[in-house]
Structures are given as C-alpha cells and as structure tokens.
Length: 74
Image 1 (tube, one colour):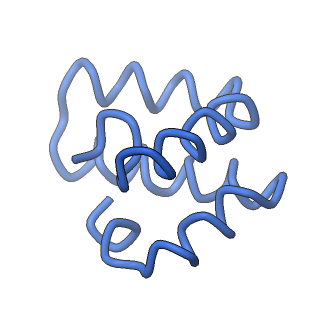
Image 2 (cartoon, one colour):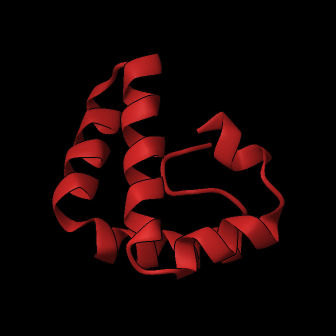
C-alpha cells in the first residue's frame, strides 16, 4: 500500500487504467496490506479484489482520481 501511494499520481492512474494490470496491482496492494496489518476490512477488500478485481480496479481508478488514494488504503 505504501509503495503504491508513494508513486507519482500519473503512474498510479496508468497502472489502474490498464485492464489486467489493474487487477494484479490491486492483488499486490490489498493482500500486502492485509499481511502487513491484518484486519477485517482489509481481509474483505483482499477477498473482493481476488474475485472481482477488474471491477474493483475501475472503481479504485475513479476513487484515486478524486481522492488521491485507493479505497480503504489511506
């Protein structure tokens, strides 16, 4: 989560914009955050991203454009 938030905003948007890449980035960020700091919300986010990652990636793209971070990842 920290490495993604430290990236330039343009790179974040590009990574979330490319289908397939956004799912892999979401998996890495969400499961990495859960492993680093376990919690119920992080586990639910990681599981949701695992199964519907493409949809969640597009939602996170819009969220990142508006708020400069991923959903539940500040």
